[in-house]
Amino acid sequence: MTGCVIAGGGPGGMVLALLLGRAGIPVTLLEKHRDFDRDFRGDSLHPYTLELLDELGLAEPLLALPHHRARYFRFHVPGATITAADYGKLSSPFNYVALMPQARFLGFLAEQVAALPGCRVLTGCTVTDLLIAEDGAVSGVRYRDDTGHHDLPAALVVGSDGRFSRLRKIAGMQARSLGATTDLLWFRLPQHDTDPPDADVDLFFGRDHYVGLLTGTAGWQVGYTLPKGGYPAARDAGVEPIRRFVAEQVPWLADRVHLLEDFSQTTLLSVDISRVERWWRPGLLLIGDAAHVISPVGGNGILMAVQDAVAAANHLVPALRAGSAVPGEVLAAVQAEREPSIERVQAQQVRTEQRVARSRARGKPISPPALLRYVTALPGVRRVLASSNAYGPRPPKLLPHTSAAR
Image: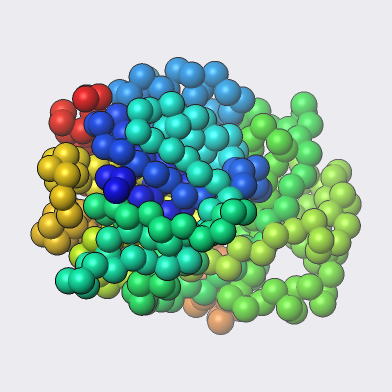
């Protein structure tokens, strides 16, 4: 029997595996894909995450990999640019958001986990069922790889397999939608040397839509918003309306929007905001998007998953060191610690979604709250907003019994 089986090699699962493994807990992480070389959309590593890795001695080698350091988060409305957050004002050695392809980040973490004694990262492995003990508690998983089906007993199973969590479905744990009204159509455009050097994470607002822009190491990521369920109509209309909107709202991209030639160059991200009522059952814990789906607007999905992993490790390490099943009250304590923060983040995202929906329904331009323009001009506000986004509400601290390798 292994100490912990983690299903899903996303940021939350990888960080939890790393923390448990460093604390001397045997861990097997199962990832259904054969590698991490996929076009992820969540590329934002916030100061909290970088400070955590620095505490573990891993920030320096991670940041030796190609990345972009974003200082600003800004809104662009007709006639004005609103700097909502200035990370450069934070009193942190990591006073920026590191934009790094998630595949690169996960690959780095997977190497660190696999190097720990008693830890394995197995790719190409799909969880097909849960093992259930006589008392009804989850006691491991059944998974499939190229050689067939295998049973893997464990003191604890953690589901970190994302917004479409297979483990959550197998366990019969339903996520309740909180009311997303937007979808995102992603595509890439090349960067030029003449592009604005301070363009980092920017939102450009216009009538009926807005465009999110992320810089990085592989050109610009462009997210074009659609009303929920609006993809078929947008596909029928073709890419010309999208090219025209981007050229109008982001004029310095007008010279290359013609490179978006058809919808095969785009990826639809159906935005969701949802949460499972109870994140655990005996022997099983859900974290990250498997427990609560965060909207990509604001770029803090990775941050929330990493903080779930820190809180979980703090509670789980003492219980797993005992070598027996993790008591239900320990699993409940993980949810009790993290749920208020998740509720707060999701409530803000729901308010944003509702404001956008009202603007569309009234035929008015989509825009951030009018008051934001004046508030962000006040001294210190940009630092406060940057800190709020950099760390989230009630960020968990790594406890000594968790951070120290055994």
